[in-house]
Structures are given as C-alpha cells and as structure tokens.
Length: 396
Ligand SMILES: Cc1cc2nc3c(=O)[nH]c(=O)nc-3n(C[C@H](O)[C@H](O)[C@H](O)COP(=O)(O)OP(=O)(O)OC[C@H]3O[C@@H](n4cnc5c(N)ncnc54)[C@H](O)[C@@H]3O)c2cc1C
Image (cartoon, rainbow, N blue to C red; front, side):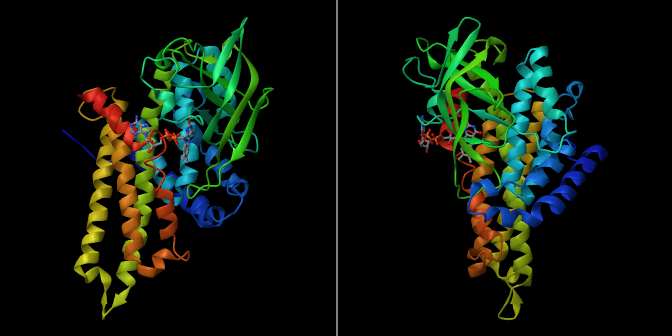
C-alpha cells in the first residue's frame, strides 16, 4: 500500500524548517540578493542559526553528532528553505551532500577529524563545506568516460613519499569563500583513463598553497558564494585522501545522486514560492470587473503550474523513498529528478512572471528574482544535456 502521509516527526521537521525560513531567511532575501558585491550577499546570521538547528548536519550520522536524516526528510527541509531563498538553501544542500560523501567513505579517523568539528555549533559561526570538481577546462570534462588519458580532470596530485602535492584550479565552486573544509577531485595518475585515475582529498583553508580566487558575480542564487579554488603546490598527506587512490570518480558520482535529489527539492521550493505569489496576485488583480483568475488563460496557466509542482513532488518523494529503502529497481533514475524538476522550475517561474504582467518584470515583486534563480538549475550538478546523455548510456 502506498501512503503519502507525513509522519508526525516529519511534519514537525517540515514545520520547524518552514518557520525558520519564513522568519530568518525570507524577510532579508531580496536585500542580500541586490548587494552588488557578492561578498556582501551571504546571510551570515541566518546561516549560523540554521547550523544551530542542525540543517548543515542533516546527513551526518547521529554517531558523529549529526541529525542522521534520510533523503526524504532532507528533501522536506531543503524545499522549505528554498521557498524562502534558493541560494541560501543550496549552501546547505551542497554542504549536506559533501558531509554524506565523507560519512559514507571516510575511515573512522577521518570521520572524527572532518565531521566532529563540522557538526560542533558551540562557536559563533556557520559551518559549511565546499567541493571542487569543475575546472576551467569544463565541468563536463572532469566526468569524461573516454579511455584516452588525455581527457578528463586536469588538476593533479603527485605522490611524494607519504604525501601528495596538488596543483590546479577549480571554478564556480559553491561555498567557495565560506567553507571550513574543502574537498577536491584531482588526477593521481595521468597515464590512466580519467575514470580510474581521479582521487579525492580534503583540506582546511589554512593549508599552504591553497587559496580562494575570483568570486563570481552571478545572475541568481546570489545568497550563495561561488568562486575559484587555487592549488599551488599544496602538500597534503595520504591520510587526507577520501577512499582509495583512483577511486574518486565513483565517489563523486554518488554525491551527484544526493545533489540530484537536493536540486529537485530546491526547484520545488522555488516553484512553490513563485506559484503562491502568482496565485495571490491573480486573485487580487481585477480587470474588467473580475479577478484575472476568472479568465481561462490565466486560470489554466495557474492550474498547469500547480500540476507540474505536484508531479515533481511525487518524483522527488519516489526517488528519495527508494534511496532511504535501498531500493535499486532501475525504474527511475535519480538524474530524472534533477532534469525534470529544474526544467519545471524554469517554466513555472517564467509563467508566474507572466501572470503578474508588467509588475512581474519590476523589482517590487520577487517574480524577476525567481526567474533569475531558476535559470541555473539545469546547469549545475551536471548540465541537463549531459545528465540525459549519461541516463541514456545507463538505460539503453
Ligand atoms: C551556481 C553554480 C554552482 C556550482 N557549484 C559547483 C560546485 O560546488 N562544485 C563543482 O564542482 N562545480 C560546481 N558548479 C559547476 C557546474 O557543475 C558546471 O558549470 C557544469 O557541470 C557545467 O560545466 P561547464 O560550465 O564547464 O560547461 P561545459 O562542461 O563546458 O559545457 C558547455 C556546454 O556543452 C554541453 N556539453 C558538454 N559536453 C557535452 C556532452 N558530452 N554531451 C552533450 N552536451 C555537452 C553542456 O551541456 C553545456 O551546455 C557550479 C556551477 C554553477 C553555475
């Protein structure tokens, strides 16, 4: 039997996230969004409070002090945060995905070293993680499945005794200027094909030779910091490697699965907010003596928006449920969530702007922000073109 009812615990979690987002994030989202300098767009106080509630540690197991949530509950929280601001929500979604990568693949000593300080919210700051995969040569280049070793990740880690020396650069990285721990995927053997020669390392920002370069001035998601990570002869120990040497790409791919679900929940929250704004406006906007909801083309547009949001929620919940129950039935690929939800969000936010007419184009309403925020979802975490290609390779 299929039951879509949330448990009492889930309702409480959803309610906690909703109340937090509406009180701490939503009221100042537009103000942060409009800061011309990306360094001023980070909602530091709200981030600290979100960490105090444990939202950065949703996917860290309880044994390390995290919330130990499953993917369904993670998606519930991310949707609520994204309904207030998608950039803010993504800071936490990405950080949670990276913490899960560590929890799933770290040795007990590494988990102690990396996760304990991350979950500890006794200090007066936020806790976020960053992971550098994408490089200037291409976010798609680093996942190259071709056997020719010339293709793939360009950044390298060269073994020197028990240490490795990392050189290279990563770009567009989320939480670039705000993280306390940085992961990166680099090539440890350039004579082998890309898919068997990437390795993952974690390091703290004070590691000599590591620096954060240019911070991006983005169209949307402005409450999120994105920038360049520079590795200039960065010396790390073999104990800083996550998983086995050469085993980095499958670990990275497992994080993309979490990110796909996270992106689905982000798209849901954003679209839900855009729909609510459009519905509210349409009920109140009177033209020729009637609210515009009474005109078929507007009513139908609103119905379509609602329908697409509800269909996406079912897809998110279905795939999250499968992840929580370790079900690998192959019926639905997790990338479908990201592709479908992100394209839905672009459509719903543009339609929401249309419902508001000229007002939708002005900054008095959040409609234009929702459109800007929606544009990048089909691009990050693997472009939709590439995800479709990988799904086709996997399925046929
Ligand atoms: C807001 C934001 C946050 C991000 N956060 C992170 C992060 O935290 N960590 C991280 O590692 N990266 C991050 N990225 C990078 C993101 O994952 C990449 O931008 C994305 O993977 C695409 O890479 P690219 O921009 O280099 O485009 P390219 O890979 O150069 O692709 C260019 C175009 O060619 C198409 N294309 C390329 N190859 C193929 C192919 N084989 N088949 C079909 N089409 C193809 C693509 O779809 C795209 O349209 C972020 C990006 C953004 C915008």
